[in-house]
Amino acid sequence: MAEQKNRVKIIENKSEIGAGTRGSSLGIQALKVASFNMKSSYFSRLKSIIIKDFNHLLFEEVKYPKAIRIEGVIEIFNAVSQEVNNQLVKNNFPIVISGDHSSAGGTIAGIKMAYPGKRLGVVWIDAHADLHSPYTTPTGNIHGMSLATALNSDNQEHRIQEIDSVTNEMWKKLKEFGNIYPKINARDLVYVALRDSEEPEDFYISNNEIKNVDVETLRRNGAESVAQDVLEYLKSCDLIYISFDVDSMDCDLVSYGTGTPVQNGLTEQEASSLINHLLIDKRTNCFEMVEINPCLDNKQNKMAETAFRILESATSIIEKRG
Image 1 (cartoon, rainbow, N blue to C red):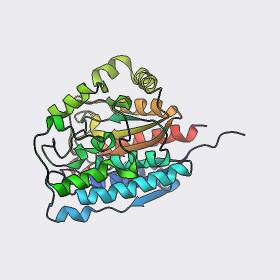
Image 2: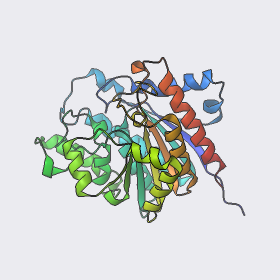
Image 3: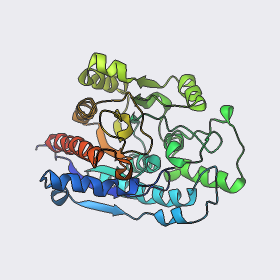
Image 4: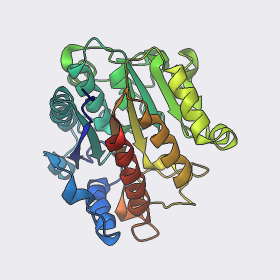
């Protein structure tokens, strides 16, 4: 009997409470506008599951400045992890489209909840390392802490501040979601296009010898070759999750339509080719796209249009897998 094909399910997560700039909650709608203008049936053809957001907290006083709106991020982690888990145990392929990147820790938790005994590799395509903790963050924005939750890391060696006991307890909840911690090993994390990290993150990356494929290497060797290298590096992993932050792309070539744009990034073609070649590997069982912000787009809806082409192409690869 032929192996059952993956069934794609879209998980829409409009939360933007982990970001420092407003507008990424509109990213999903911007993708739908792009799809409509391209006369694509993508969002009518594929079922979407809507995650309840807690964006009302944006209008309330910040209670925990070292981990801003962490009480809402806990709720988002819970909702996202449960839905990712639900889809994976049904043998579906979840594509998570999120506002800000903080909830990716919940996605990773959901994968581990579905497969607690499996070793998970993470390919983090992002200009930023997202390795801060409340002890090291200069901003308090949790979208810069998502990988630290998965690694169960405080990076205390490079702390710049202390935190209160309530913040610490809530931070512990984020790290221990699903009662599995750490959820990934530093050896099983690969960065692509990282180019805007900070000293505590650089220390953690260097100390743990985390692999980073910079833009120059990808451009020199080609996306297909880099994908093969990454997959070989993660050969001991049972599963692979791809997290794609659109700020990994070059803001001058594409658009400034993301919360933290960084120059000298990937082209659309490089990002799409890399993702597609990683998705061919059947160990890859979840894909996430984050941080589209149409409020900041200097080219109308260019970022969402670019991201939609990448999304549609990636989905085609998933659907063709046997």
